[in-house]
Image (cartoon, rainbow, N blue to C red; front, side, top):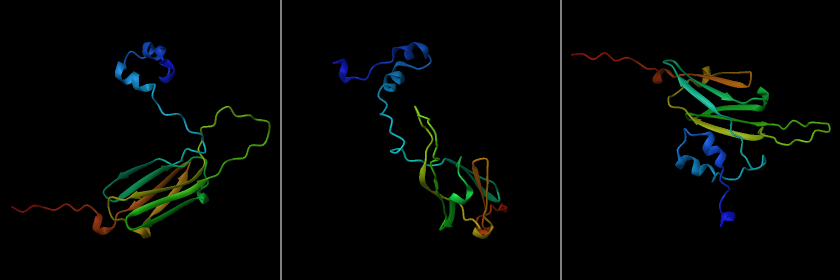
Length: 147
């Protein structure tokens, strides 16, 4: 019967008393790890908003800015590109590789209308920063209430 159940990691139960039995029970049923070829790579991003603009910061470490494409269409910002695998020459035998490579495409729906002619993008230290000024119609306008 034991061969049908995943092995229980009893040492984790003792080492992590802050977690309850229910949380620890499901730790043993994690899906098998996929190989690097089977994992899809998607860069993560943050989006913030001020009164006058949206700012999108995308983590794309190890890439060159010429390998990244940006398009803006119908309220959707598309970020695409390809992170190429670096060929290592030599006698290195890797035991584990966790870096992701390959093509990606992120479509980000923008919450407000932006002025496409004033969009600015900079790339520094692996972070792509896209500044999207709001269109005049989307700018926040304070409305005075008359009594």
